Image (cartoon, one colour):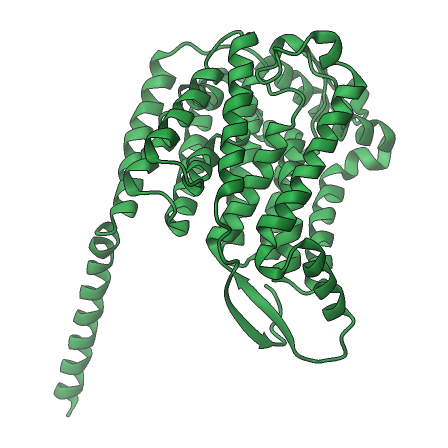
Length: 430
């Protein structure tokens, strides 16, 4: 009897080992997964070659290190944290990240480049995971994510804080695909604490939260995100709150016309005018409202009907509530399109700002009804515009036209059904 039992145990253990051993081959038989791993490996080699042989271009690194040195020296007044490019204009998360980088690298550029090379691969891995999960692109189109000269430069030769902000944002989005809303909001808030451009994702994110969570879940998730901001900014909020809030969250900054990649064709007096800024803000809000009503909430009867239904369900006395599970495609499409609208209406895009939406470009292009050839032409055209230095009247006008064509394609695309399934229960959002 004991021998029979031992034999059965050995068979089970052998079967388990065979299943575990066959897991990786099964995974790699998926052409997109295999392509993603191959791209990660190939790009890792390219990253190593760039860091080793391409000269570093000094732009903001010294300013970052000066600001961090002041912070580590005990300075808590944001107006006194300055570098050779001016005062610190990023929230407190930026200081913690670059303080850690300074500690690890000693402030030297080359080891920092190695660190950013690792960050580049991590970010690419997260993005490839999102693309594989959504299944919008054909397997070969995933290679577009590795073909940007400008993106390699931003990560490896410039060491901008945009790289960390967008990596955190992409990680948050990956969590949202699995309905991890509270943790996703915490990571999202961490991204905002590094650079405020991440707030371009806030309107579509809030809409998705209203769709996927009850009111209590939305409030608690937003409270968690707010708590992250308070905790990270606490040393400054306690000592010099006005200087911190006005410096780190200044929404009225006017960028230098020379560095604008998207509106260089606009005369400088118009570019810096308040009227131009207000016009872009109005266009931004109108486009968000139109897309929310006619595209993102189309299957719910429009934005107003959706909000009315959510308000009614909030005050309903019924114990049963319907909390849908959003499809991954709907989540990513809403987030990427909402951010792209913000990019289109931004008064000034500097070269590092390309990282704000490059990794969404292939997805957005394949969400349009355009033929594949036109998608590739648009992708190449955008990349070429971002590699014209300095930008000029023609490159900036062309970039705006390309953005408008992409937006028109997104508008003409059929909205995907938002819900994977609906469970009528008292299920709580994670």
